[in-house]
Length: 301
Figure 1 (spheres, rainbow, N blue to C red):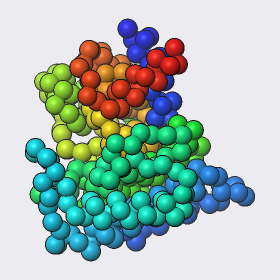
Figure 2 (tube, rainbow, N blue to C red):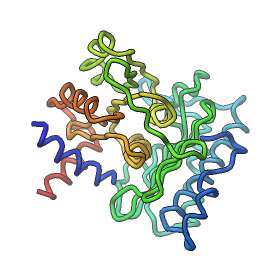
Figure 3 (cartoon, helix red, strand yellow):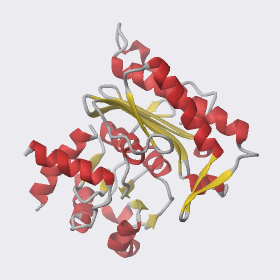
Figure 4 (spheres, one colour):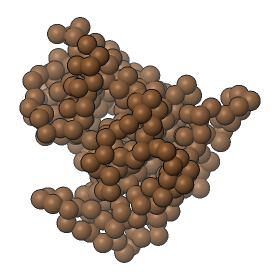
């Protein structure tokens, strides 16, 4: 089973492919890497600019935003909508041929060969209640694979930039993976199924688990932290790929299981443990990402 899982995880990875506002973006530092700026770096710089714009919009509206009921136990704010509309407008001006998949205005679109994903505020419930665990995130797909991404968590003071061939950076510094053993690991979990399958075991045998209520802050803290592991169960491209790509690009041990779980660990031992607990049949009929991934695996076979 593990060999099969590893094969699917590799395919999933192929499918996938913060700093303070006035801080110097990492990509400006990286301009010295060669005589010609790569396209991947161009995309990263463009998304960095939008991430800083998102923070400016947040700061302008943070004391007077509106909360709108979006559905059962779900909300959106006018800040989400303003940020996303701004990003869409800027993408259409800079890259008119690129498609856009975004949470509020383009949620029914599918990822194409050339595509931006936008999550204007990941963790909107946290944001609306004044908790700091939320963030802006974007990714860019080229030829169907992620080649650049950004995450900006203003209240956590974490700004992540990643681009293919250049690495992953946290607040302008290259991300370092701090290894740990299983007993000293701490886990960030997102998704009810994740907690049901693994929470009790982690509580007994590790430094424990936390659930932050958002992909962006969870991935950002893994990239900024020490000995942190992540298990995520999200359904949509804008939730998953910015952080998953950034972790994979930094050298973390990553797997995207075909039941919809995403796993990030500092070493293979911990990754294998998580796979052994989570590689189980899950009813993901309504999970858009899982359907897309399952279709890709079928086509690859």
